[in-house]
Length: 225
Image (cartoon, rainbow, N blue to C red; front, side, top):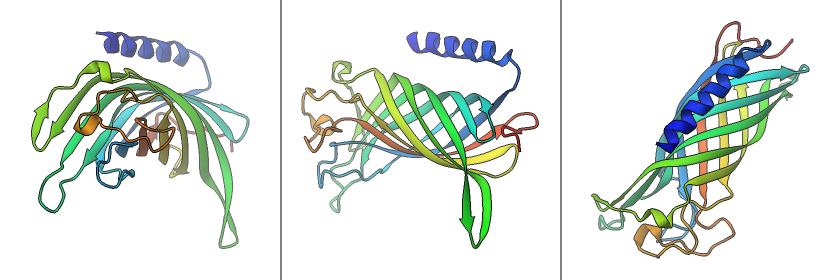
């Protein structure tokens, strides 16, 4: 129920913003790879074996010639997965489904390639707040229960990415996300996939690489060339 209220509130906020002038809106969709730091029971590194997807809507406004402030509402499927070993043992997968609201600053840059300058690249920086509305745990092909008290429902992330502007209506982006609140609490009972290893300050945190194609409605002229 709470995540539904969260979604409705987010859509109402966007609707209010859209009444103003000089705003662009759009849709995004794409795959992602994710991991949770410290859950690998073999070599304790981040393998990014968990494949998920993300999608949502966004609204933005251009400031000056090269800067855009963008607000998004996204569904994001994060988690971690360990593939079976050579004896077909050790498999597990944790899936965490979030509703996220990122606030992004996009900045267009000029890139010199083969003595030619291109201005269809951007870097982006931002932060997001998310709510964990569902989750699942599969171990060796069996769906097992998870004690919610071992998980944090709130996910706060820092974001960094790069975009390629394909046309006035389309752009493709690669975004890295790292949470600052562990999804698996650091005092969680260490049982199989919930056994996080104290490798770093990032122990138990979500990490993700997102590959999204975004479409801008209307003329799509976000920048004033």
